[in-house]
Each structure stands twice: as structure tokens, then as C-alpha cells.
Image 1 (cartoon, rainbow, N blue to C red):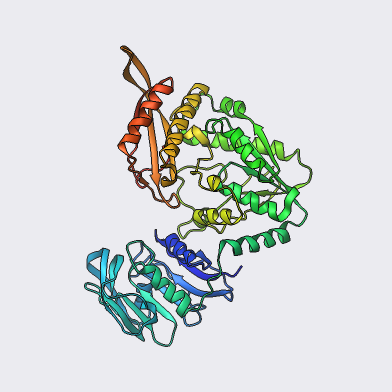
Image 2: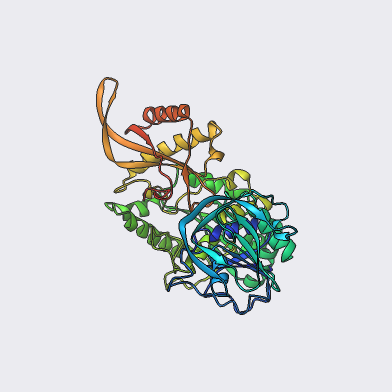
Length: 509
């Protein structure tokens, strides 16, 4: 697989979005920290410098070593990158009188600039900076302005170097994708050969070469990532792939058997291990969410290790790691602060002497789904909402009991089945129910009740990094609330969570 485009990360919240926009052009790209990128750039066709929360005028300003890039590879500098090129190459950057943040419109575009082909004056762009370029770098040529920003875009004579003070990758830059395409395809001449079919062909060949006749064990979850990873590996090594699906007792109602039935028709070698009682026993009396996650992670590894030992000469453990996990682990600021731990992240205990293979580690979530479609995986399975690794344990606030699990499984089934029957399931990125650690007073059949409260959660997102709550129809919410209270013994009140991420997270724990 060709590397094609290198994106240097200076800590901007938008860096991953740049990569997503580039991938949408069927161009493969990789993100590296500005201070730790490959020394051999021979396979790259272009470089993009991202934005940053830092100021180029500050003592802590990131200083990339561009000696192997500038003037040698086509380069697009975005926001901080544009200011960096100016400030340290003969231009001037100064603090703006007002923070330039939000929508702006191009008021001037230099004629006959390939970068702006198909882009008209007055095109909307998105600014996000408190500094502004006051003078261009040596050999800089102004190619676009807005009403408030004279040097909104420039290029450098004698180099294939372009710089823009706005963010083309965000939705609010209406022609941003066109500008990225103009730079990458027309100026840098990067091939548009990164398609799902091409990825499958390259990855299957790579897996055959890497794994040869070795045996591989994979923990299936029923989710999209592990399923696509399994089918890819199955194409590469066939019978040498051993899949294990562990029931931790915290899956959705009937999910253990339903998922096993789904896998039967896919030609995968899958063993179901029902360890629900073991997990629930270990979790008894535990209320702290991080402790719950760690217990589930530990027991999962113990069960998985027991099962893998039953397979002779296993050499590899396959995981469904995807690109956002990889990026976070090598980000400019180091691994992200721990909001919550996950049972698939953080490596293996020393006693599991297995090498790791991660066939999806370079894909975003939406790309995993497209690869899955090219592999012929059932659209219903590919369209499944994400489900947390610790399962319902982090949707039961407080301690976990078999009765609480029963209540939440029943409630969840009513909610998810309702979304499907109303044609709303595919319009929601993730949905679930949360069992709150409070009781509320109610009245049923002229009798006073004191029972559980359920919160329903439904969000829209593309990758889970940010999310907004879904405006579900009031008629639907009324119907599903009535169904939950009438059908699930132990619940007398239903509320709807209207928090976005950030500041909230999608899950409650």
C-alpha cells in the first residue's frame, strides 16, 4: 500500500478530520506527530501541516523539521502551518485585535490559480485562530483574502507550497473538499487508488505474507470491527483462524445466541463461551465504574487465555483496533488523558505470549463499514450500533445484580426494537438505555410504587469523537416510554438524555 500523503499533527482538534477528508478522495494518508515522523519520505507524494492550539509567537510553539519536506514535496500548510511558514521565513504574524473564529467569506481569489479551480468568490470558509499573518514570507504570493483577513491563502514562488489560514476540512468550509482535491490531485498528482476493494486485496496479501501457516486467535464481540477483522483474516488464512465469542453476562437480550447464529453462515470458525456467571460473580458489590471496567477486562483476558490454551501452537492474537486508537497513542501530547479504560486497549499481560495482528489499524470506523460491504458482510450486521466492550455493566449505574441486568436487557430490547419498527434505527449512530441508581414514586392501578428510573440515550455522530443527541419524535418517545413501563417489571419512570459530547460522554460511565 502506498503511503501517499503525510499529515503532521500539531495538536489540533481537527487533525483527524483532515485525514477523513483526504480519505474521502480515495487517497491514503497517515497522521504523525510533527516531531516524530518517518525519516524515509520516499513513498510520500504530499505533506499537509495541520492546525494547533499553540501560537507561533509563543515560547512553546511547535517547531517541525521541514528540511526533508519543504521544496522537495508538495506541501499544504493549514492555519498554524500557514502562520509558521510566514513567521519563520521572512514574514510576520501578530495577535489579532479580535479572535478570528467562525464563518468568513472569500472576498478575493487570484485568477488562474489551480488551488481555487471550481471555487467562486464569496465561498464560505471557517476560521479558528487568534493570530493573523500581517506579512507574507519570502517569495510569498497572496492568492485569497476575506473581508477581515488579507492573507487568507498564499503560495510560495519556486516551491509547490501552499498555505491557508482557514480550515478546509470542516463542514462549514463549503468548498474545502474541492480545495483539498485541487491541491492533492491536480497540483501534487497524488493517485486516487485507496478504495475498499484495493484495501482488501492489499491487506489479504499482507496477512498471508505475515502469518503464513501460523494459527491466530481472535476475540469476536458481534460488533462491526471484530467481524470485519475476522472475515479479512479468514480470507487470508482460513482454518488457521480461531474465533472466540465470550458471553460476559452483560450482552443485550438474546445477543449471545443471535450473534453465534449470524456467524454460522459466514464460514467462520467460532466457539461460543458462556461465562456470564463468572463475570457477574466477580462484579458483585462493585459500584465504581473504572473498577467495573478493570474487572471485566481482567476476567475477559482470563477466560480468553483459558480458551486459547486449548488451541495448540497459537502464535498470534488478532484485534479489531482502528485508526483513532492508533492516533491517540502517538499524539503530540502523548496518550490522551484516561476518561475511561477499555478491555481491548493497553496491551496484553506478560503471561500471554502472543504476537499482535491488527488488520484494521489504519481505518476509520466508516471505512471499516465500507470494507465490510466490499467483503459481502450482511448490511444488517455492518449497520449495528456500537456497543461498549464492558456491555451493560456501564449502563447500570452502581452495583450490578442479575435482577438489574434482567431489567436493563428487557428495557433495551423494547427501545432498540422500537427504533427499528419506527424506521429510526439507521438514523441513529448509537442508542441504549441506562438504569439509574435511584427509585422514584409512581402510581400503578391506584397503588403507590417505588421503582427504577430509566434514561434513554440516542446520539448522532460519525466516529464517536463528538456526538449530538437525536431529536426523536415525541410520538415515538411517548410510545416507547409506555411500552417500557407496562412491559418491564420494576420500572415506573423513563427520561430522555439530551446531552451532547462534549461536554458529556456518550455512555454514562
